[in-house]
Image (cartoon, helix red, strand yellow):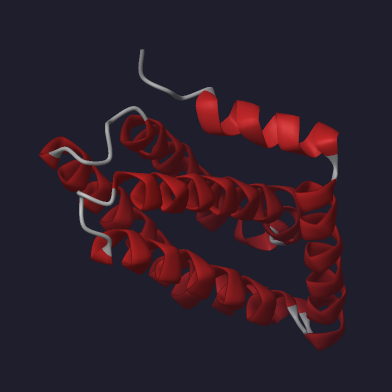
Amino acid sequence: MDATEYLRGEHELLRWLFQAIRETPPEERNKRQALVDELSEQLVMHELLEEQVFYPALGHASDLVLHAMADHQHTRELLALVQSIEPACQRFSEQFEVLRRTTEEHLAEEERVLFAAARDLGRKEMLRLGELLEKRKRQLAESPEEKAVRHFNRTAWKVV
């Protein structure tokens, strides 16, 4: 699987999690919280994958990468805000929608612009990057040290 196919699958997982949270009634606080926790974990892991593997390979598109990195920072700030709000309250729903729209716009832009720039790397390099993404995802998911780093990345932006 090449890098853009792999990342497109990641994007679909994130979209599914956003939809699952939207469809979960506020009264189902525990389920909603569990979904938010899973979204947080997957979103931070996804951003780390892109920042550590995919974006460095796109040196020829540095302005696009800088824009995507700024989007990631903004997403982390929004995610921290959403995590700091009780999932059953109206403010959660409002802030969650801002996070969802911002993230989905970023994913769509990435698929349209960065994936097009990535095609310039050629098929062989895209397949190599796809393998690296898969390997790094396993490392992020399985390593206790990586889990600690992800936890820090998820909580470092929390609004006090």
